[in-house]
Length: 267
Image 1: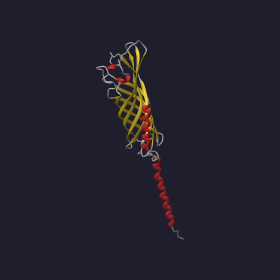
Image 2: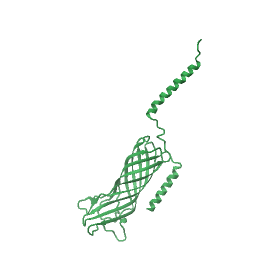
Image 3: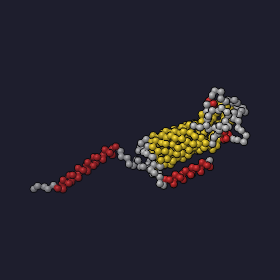
Image 4: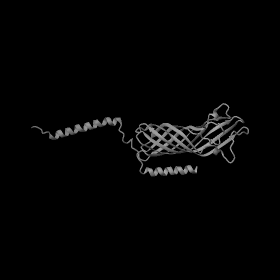
């Protein structure tokens, strides 16, 4: 947890320093979410598996920095402290097992946003994510004594997993501009692991690959340092219609005044 705080402080410091000479639309924000998480393993889903997967919830939060390279396309990087895991029902002995993993996740995503001159716009992101395992625990409750996991001497449950994990993350939702600088967003986020989360040297021979996956609702609040002032530069359709009429009236008035100035009455 101390490592997470230090890294978050470092990212905020870098962002603040960069913001002094930041390009247009550079922003920083906070992100948080909660949803389901699960291990994708073919062996655990077989009928003869010693365990049965149960619905599991997880979540977390952190910070984000990003920028728009064009009016629609940009990038966003996040640093998130997240809890994931999997709940099981151990068939032999009728016991409940819960695996809890905590990660420091760093997704690097390309993003697309529809017309940002609108107050509410559609948002979508896609990119790779690297995760660093910070803790791993397992608890077993109820039923009779039974153990389905054998941990070698001098090792802990943490050692059964790889310390780094790679996945693909994608999200889509809406972004609502509160004003030129502040915006609030809500996105549906999904991730799928692409490498085995378990240590191959310690897992049972022949055991299938375990992929860490999940889906959640994420809420975010962003602050833009140098906004493009999209809203203040907008001209409504009614204003556009009024402008030619006003200019026309001014022109006609000027002509009449000029005509009167050179008109000489005849006696």
